[in-house]
Image (cartoon, rainbow, N blue to C red; front, top):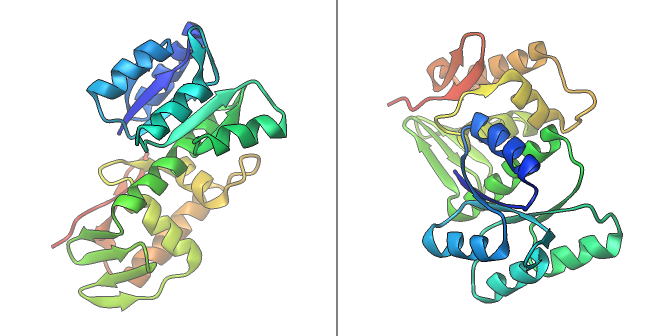
Length: 222
């Protein structure tokens, strides 16, 4: 996944680059609207992280301009503004999400994953992992062409793994995604229990790979 971060705070940019690269994202940086415009002309990005106030203008006005030009890349807007009307303005002018500064790394990563999942789902609704197939639009799962009934939580877990193909998700990341409660994230034992139940229903233990000491990933099984 290719992310463009647009912010003139070099200390924050250094911190974000380090954090996001650790999460295996490919990061480009722009410190002004001029640099950001050049970046999106030269490369297609999966997500733009954009600050409201930049040295050569308003991030919101630039966002509105590129939306008018037909650029639909998801945008997560940063701002220290906390008024409801400011948030409404940002969303009305094309932001997909709004995050108030200062923000926690946990919340930032969760917002990024949510936006990337949403964008990916728009592009592709049917995922093929060999004998395992997932129809995201209909929320249906098939193993050897036979439909498998999953609970809401089990489907969310499988979907999360599938949308992060080739990425090993830690137990903490999975618990965070399933609970959506940043103050009381479930223990790793709960995650292991969900994985066990999901494997049992799928009847395909090999479809979900355990990476010892780290977490889980989805596998293609023919």
